Length: 361
Image (cartoon, rainbow, N blue to C red):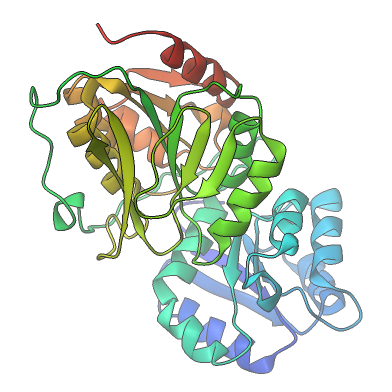
């Protein structure tokens, strides 16, 4: 896809109201163009034969063929960036992970009631999801240059760290941030970590209600314990805490150890939870006791926070371009000098093990 022309989107949904609403939302974005709409996968298949879209927005419950079957056919025959928008994913059910494993780039919840109003209120989220999907790497394709828009910083949630004010303790923590492509990337990292790994605190950009099911799924796959973070949870060795969708997650000192704080607040870097907020809190509370890892995702959330961590002595890592689904957030961190190391996804677990087995100088 050329960065000089609009992103062409095909909307596949059996609801005329949803198709109309999504068209209205996407038409507000000058960099997005509606290629067409389809009421079921068979009509969509004919449209794709006529002209290939850059992104498909796909419902799951449709006549003649369900969306999951159609997604699997697309990925087997002609892989394209697909965003699933369905009521079946609203509660973070098993279908969420099936569509991600089948190759969907992102998932947008669609409630069974007040769907039109919900989608209108999610205009920024829908347009950003399309932009991220268009940049997603499928079978070696390279994402085009992305533009980073102005947005709120972590200053709206907590003040910046002051170098030299963090007292060195023995506890070590790992903070990870990810967005598009991060659900499967996190699984790849966490499921090979040993049970004695240092405590992890994670922000993955996901809609509200999805993170509890995501954490539960990982908990069943990993040797470490994984749970959706609750306010006051301790950061413990052998456990990962995942920020709940729609809430910011911060690390706080509790004597010689750490706990997390879950709070509301404005969008930071256009996200809530925000990686910048997590990383800044780790810089303030843990300093050189922390390892920050920024993984695949669009935009620049986490780049400034990772730089703040590095400035107070924390170890910092960015995922490399080759292993990213979208090389946006890590690239911004690298360009700003925030990443002391740039590593492929398959080496992240080794870096966490190494960090957990050493002591602060």
